[in-house]
Image (cartoon, rainbow, N blue to C red; front, side, top):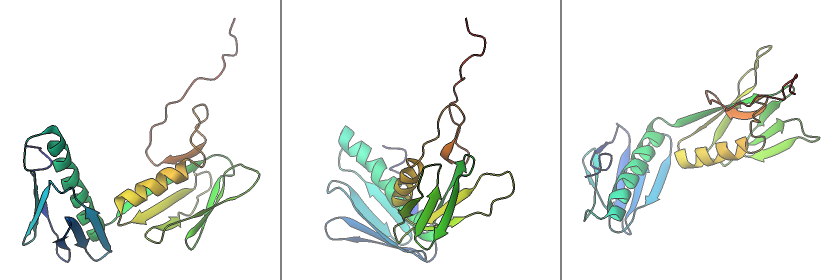
Length: 186
């Protein structure tokens, strides 16, 4: 059996999970509500505060979906109970970000500012910048998939370049740096 798929998902206090017709799993908690359509072959059962996912056969397709849907349901439970946070750092002279409600205003070295509209499920804040430190954007949400897509879209506005490392990167991300031109190359 799938090591991930056979593990049960425990529901914390205040979180409910229901399986609706059409194999749609709905998870509701203090931070919000998420739904996920599960493949018809996969069976999801809720017994008390434990959710289990099972598969009908040992085919490779069923094995891969078994672990996938268990992980998606676990991410939904964690999201509506604790939430997720992604921190992004703006590396570059004069790079800045301002949060105005659901609109982010970036200054990324272009001739114009970039305005980025956030979905309603995502909350953003810009950490106060200390002198000599890079600005940090903090994104929070209960939906892990949506949060990852928005963070990737923000990173694509100015990807980190390999020579000086300027751009938008995740906090703690290791960049692959290249050496510049050699001064005394013959």
